[in-house]
Image 1 (cartoon, rainbow, N blue to C red):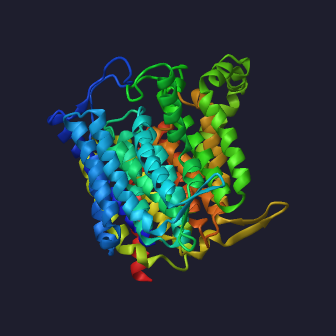
Image 2 (image 1 turned 60 degrees about the horizontal axis):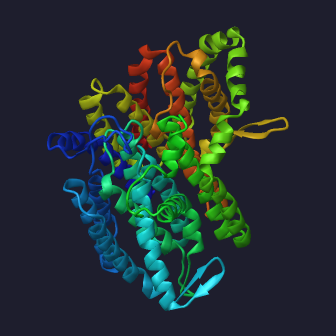
Image 3 (image 1 turned 60 degrees about the vertical axis):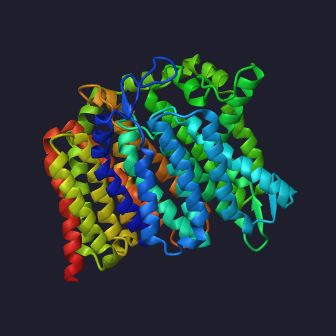
Length: 554
């Protein structure tokens, strides 16, 4: 519960502050200008977004983690890498100066880690302390650079970091590493909030300050969870698999530049995101594809760590092939006539089914969802009192944010509905109703409240996603860049909770998934019935307020 509070606090803080920070950066002209060549944005976009993440993470560590002396070198490295990134965002700096500061940050991280390391293992090979130190140092510098080089599309690095943070959080929870739990829960909260403004179309960029510190946080966290403290051994294979997308992309691009006689640090358009985007694939879809591929590597990293090392290495090599030959594979897929099957299916669906869905299914499901939200309140046996005060604070902040921004940006305030639904289900975590059997179905087995919500909403939302072009009267984007990242985060958390042996770990992904399904239904309903937007928005606050009142009463 403590780490959920940390995540929520970071999330709400970033969501609340970022609009004002964007306005400030625009006024002082700290923006990234389009160049019409390598950069894909068409108008100036504020950068230095890493400052928000840096300040939030540092503040939360000081507040929630007591033993600062044990992590002082880690923090020195954070300050060093952020400083050079921020300087570059503001004034610009040559590549070799950045490289020097990356080496300083890597040295600080080494000092933090090396007392617990005597040997290093990489793909079954073992190295003594001296070569181990050199390899780890190069790995740290290379990973920081790889995150920076991958930061070429809106929300790409933020989304991948969010997924990796979710995996590492569960591993840290299994190891009871208190520092990493504070760091990763704070980072996940920051990134979910920041992605609302950084996802397609981005209103603010990470900048070098952001991509550098995210790379530093990820490499530091993944190396720390890879330590075997009793044997004083660090298995570098797990970090390499988990961070494969940025690392493999960087190695591939650098190799191509060197082999063609070009400087390895001179930018070009040969990164994986440039290749996919060049195939007339939308910006949002490109980010989704790469982030989803990162999810596959993350799942394989867990498989390697907890189940089968040899099998994990074999799958790792197989997964690398599409990453290396992405250009040829995409050309083959795009030229295939099989891509037309989906369009033909959509067009052949009888119109009366679409009309029935809009006029009957959606209203009925809306009433059922409302009843499902009332049910835990009416029949609840217990509520999570430990979350009362934090949820009250969060609710007040969200109300203030609503009063200031509802008329300005309705799309932004819709995300608050997701926060409210999530808070509602978190308050009800200790409510036995959520996982109690409602009835027993023939062949299917026991039906719980959680499964009932999924059984009703998943096909309803899925049908809309498949046939939205015919259901909507006008062509609009339904899923935002942040929505797509949250979908992948839910999948990753679900996989991780199933694969990592932690008691009751399924509750976290279950709660997020259930909340997100209700939120997606809210989005499609107000898209088709916009007159209900304000009413449903108010109900999202009301259910949280009632839950909090019941805690006080009972």
